[in-house]
Length: 420
Image 1: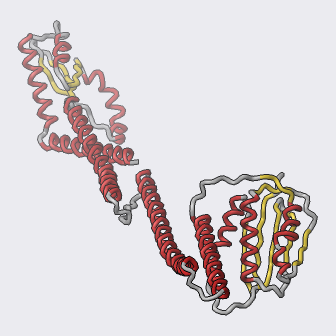
Image 2: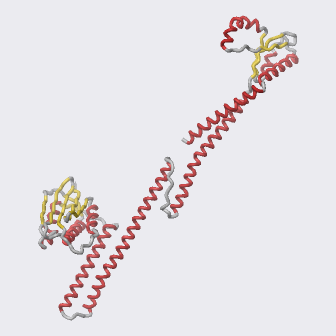
């Protein structure tokens, strides 16, 4: 587009200059009576040639050689113009005047023997003058083309240099510096690409900083939480080692406290493991094996929630006919079920029935568990790390895991793809 615009401007400039130059030259020649002067000089040259060569009627063909030597002159000689054009001019003089044609100028030329002939002369400008004007116009048009093209390209070069400077600023580490977006061509697309790349790096860096901050907070919190029961455990163990207890009842109390602190440390370590399972990168691979859906649901109803029934809870299993199979890692699936059972024991209301529903629909095994949440005093907001752990494990099995808490009812619904 820049080239076309520059070319059009160059051609228009050359044409304009050509018209102006030709008009100036013609105007100057008209003001200086160039045509009349040239005609008079041509007649003088012709008379001198006749005298020098003694041109007569017998050797009148010498005039042809003279005409060939004259440049920029058209000449025609006539013996008797009146005899040649007289009848025609007499009959058509009115039509000639009406058509606007002027009469041709004929000049008398006397030969050396005194014979008079007529000469029709027409002088015109030298073609070299127009060649020079055309060459000058082409050169000027080329200069205009180059200058305009350079001016247009120079804007893009400045934009490229600006992007280069901004890239150096980004390379120095200042990723907050905005890229300049200008125009709508390929260079602008490159600028947009750099801006998107920069924003992606900023987003990744922000996520990395947040993850590092969360990890630091987790380490700080876990170190504090671990230090308190660990200090108590060490203290009780020191008392037991030094046998600093009064009777058998105090010994049992010390052992009870040690056991409670040990289980407290175990729960904290489990939370830490679950956190890294959710937010960390796993290196181990899943070991999938095919399992019938019916076996999985029966094991869930009859074995997994046996402790729930032992504590007096009631199960309501609504199982539709199951004929499909799923690919699962039994160890990780067991972790999901253990996590759900742990939450039910901790927060579930044993006086309300635990509902389990299972069906096969749209190529998926759907398993839903619902139960009422018991009211707790001094309730502390859960981090939901366990549920996030379950979600990630099920998603690694190419399934979905969803949970909700509405009007005191906790619902979990997981879906696993059936083997085709």
